[in-house]
Image (cartoon, rainbow, N blue to C red; front, top):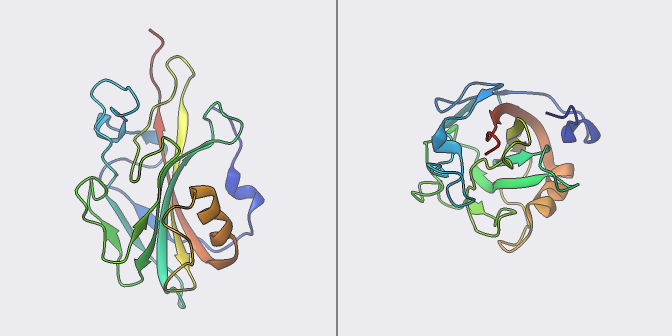
Length: 178
């Protein structure tokens, strides 16, 4: 597992709290959060349950992302990017992406695997543990002007100037060498 933290290069903003019933911070994901679509046997590609609190005053919407900075790509791997989540929302149920239970108005982008929605963890077999940074971004506008066809990195570029605060939780995943 590498020590690189992509959020170190971004403007420092206040933190708020995010928790999950699906996994604990810096603990392994369950098989539900692994990716069967990307070849992990038994993986279900279920987006994790998330609850957040303490977003700052002025929050007008939220974005939720999941990024693997340890992917052997030179640029990491975006597993999930959803935005324009209304400011009145403070949680997402488990598997909200697959079950289409995201709040009205939410936009999900295609992940780096090429499909819209949540792609579970799928580190290469034998590559060691990977960190999956699940981040809830408190946003200063109700609606980000980002096309539904944009890449998650472009969403990140827009969040660069619109994030008031971030809540982070990190899941771990590893696939043994075969």
